[in-house]
Amino acid sequence: MNYKRFIYYQGTIGMASSMIFPFYILLIRNVGDSYAQFGWAYGLFALTAALCYPLIGKYADQVGDKTLLFVYSWGMAILLLFFPLASEVWHVYILQVLMGMLGAVQKNSEKTVLARYVTKEMAGTQIGHYHVWTSVAAAVAIIATGYLVDFLTIASIFYVASVIFAWSGLMLMKLKSVEVS
Image 1 (spheres, rainbow, N blue to C red):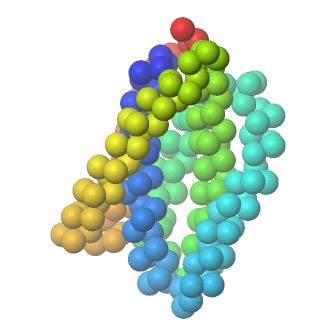
Image 2: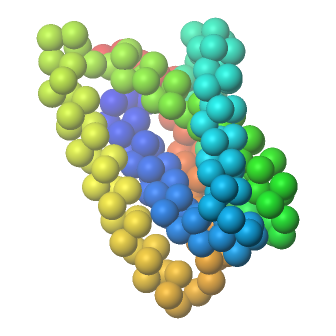
Image 3: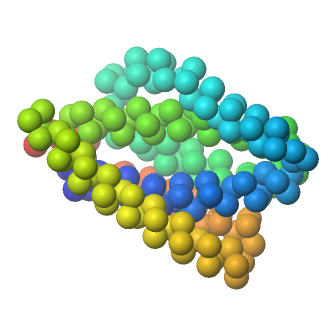
């Protein structure tokens, strides 16, 4: 995968992630009874990710970036199908732990690909350009999802995001492994 395709891939998963995270609060509020439960859900996500980073980092160079990003895309595509089915707060907690694992895979892989592509002398400029495009994709997704939720249901955004994650996984299957230019 070349750098431009990596940015396109990251923009795609950024769109899918941005579709669910701002509106995810509404789902948790419908399932839980308090903001403390919301805090626990996000805390479990963050704690699980933190505990997974050392293991993921250990295997990142052995397994390869493309493989890990593939696991992330398809893992999220499958996992998001279960969110609309969550009817108890403990369901959300389990889903958050699994998302924490996958989030750690994505964040670690994103950083390793960037480290492989950017040149040391221009790292700030190149990473700045990278963040422009991934942030624009995320912003467009958040705005569009607001309209989508108005016309459909909160559950529908999880299904749409699942399809986008699956599509990103298909994009990865077609790409060669990371090539440093």
